[in-house]
Image (cartoon, rainbow, N blue to C red; front, side, top):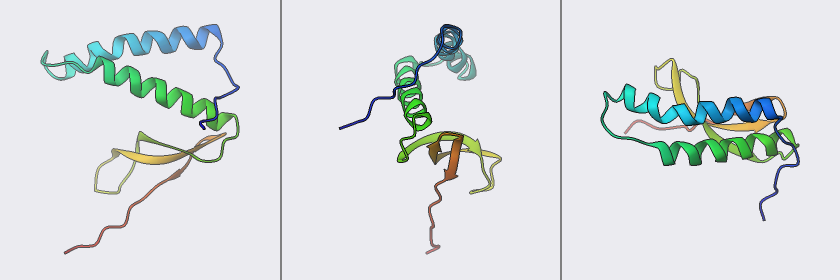
Length: 101
């Protein structure tokens, strides 16, 4: 059973987040040069991340999500990586060891 967060966002936070989500689709289309869209997947990802963040703030200690974070795992400045969320935000970057064949 998934624990629902007891925390909530105030009206200003809801409004700011709503505007960012509403405009995210437009930003993706602009970045892709007017080709394609990803609105539904972005809304789902935002909803999932918000719920996970609220659960982490609520003290649930087993919250993992993917986030675009500063990283040097593969020589890039930023990369989407699995992170552990906690009361103070990102608590750990989950790294995967790979071996060269």
